Amino acid sequence: METAPFLRNRYWILRHGKSIPNEKGLIVSSMENGTLPEYQLAAEGGVQAQLAGELFQKELKENNVPLEKVRICFSPFSRTTHTARVVASILNLPFEGPQCKVIADLRERYFGPSLELKSHEKRI
Image (cartoon, rainbow, N blue to C red; front, side, top):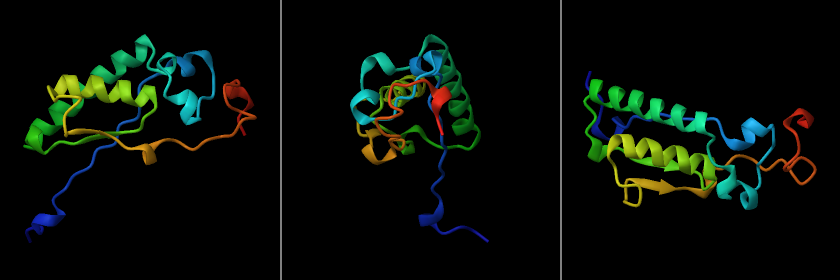
């Protein structure tokens, strides 16, 4: 039985690579801090994002998904923006183009001022 055309979308979810806050053991969950460039990917996270982009590219080819059908949606946090930028680069998609879109509602939950920029050892 063939699937109806409107049910043929496929979705892949990619978590951001290791971030500078991850390395420092900090909780960064507010939009105000999360969008700062100093909280983007660490060097290791950049390598992870590149590998993820390469694996995603392979997956797209194996599934015959044309690049013009690919959309990359990401939160405004610098760690996810950085990850999306690396993946778009691997796929040769223009990051500033219509295929890459920041969506504020994709951001993680805010843990509140008592945990913001504190050690992740103090998380609940």
